[in-house]
Image 1 (tube, rainbow, N blue to C red):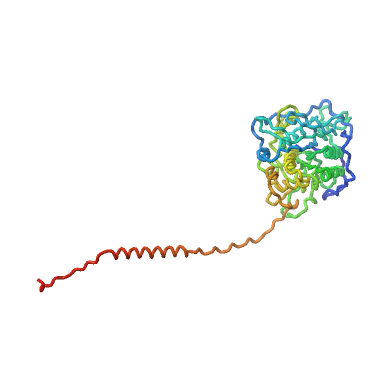
Image 2: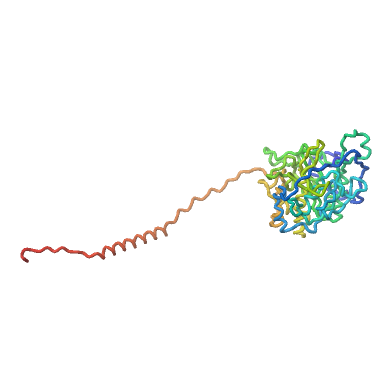
Length: 456
């Protein structure tokens, strides 16, 4: 699942290349944390129901893949503040230090109401405290979470319900300028890590009107030293067109010039770490949107996390057909990486935000070509990120064309040197011969004398 920004936007101007340079002058204020529009929640629309699951000692597959117990020997994220900009985070006993950071969806809210149950899942993946006998735990259990609500499928512009039938679903609400304000608010409140599991996907031939968001991301990263981790987006929800991969006939093509889907904030890869999803086998998830901005990948399937409706854990949402939709998406891959960032920041406090991003990318399990638009620099590796020395440079985020090279012809093998063996054999043979001669010489030689008749 990946929350989408669907309102308060226009398509901007045609611009099929990289994002334009960020204009710091567009930086919005972080206060007040109020919706930019009047909003409503339909009175006959219930909040999202959840499917309980994941209780017990079994460790969820994503956690097993990341080998968190080994990583916790080096860091548990102590002292880190992770801002979750999402659908809100409900209070939960396994998030005892949850801080209300503000609400850009409902007037009077403080960020700790989660009608969508999405932000609570994200926060649980990042920092849920471990519980005896339970396999599930957050990646950085000693970190603290700030919740800022910025979007919700259950809200819409005020007055819209009068134009709808009672059975119609809400339009949803999320304003991209409010997202920019939320990023600044998180940075100003001391967040060392900011997780954004929200995306806006539009045609690749247009540049979204996201200048204030770009300015806020730059401000958070360069001026407030916060690492911003963002989701790559899902083809199943708002980003159906996806993006083309590497054309084997044109391997050197610039992927930025062939976009069919422009994804923000992912495209601001000078300032953010964009995360794609992989399955339990380490393969790119079918729903994960590729792009030239991909930084790394993390597990985005078989997810277990905290329940916004109770005190336990869940593994799915109840959909409109009363079926269960499993938890999956780049939305949930991103907080795994945000948690790893918190671990790294706690262990290496001297590193800047951009240096932390470089360490995460440099220690990932790289694909054969070094980087590709599906998994970026590869699957995140918490233990390596906490322990490895890293190279001073990374390969560029671009396809590497195949090339041929002549392998060196192996030199002929050196003839075996049998001199020592031959000397030993000759010496042994000589000794044996002398022994034989000596033995023969030790036997008496008998002469047979003849007797003549004259002697008789």
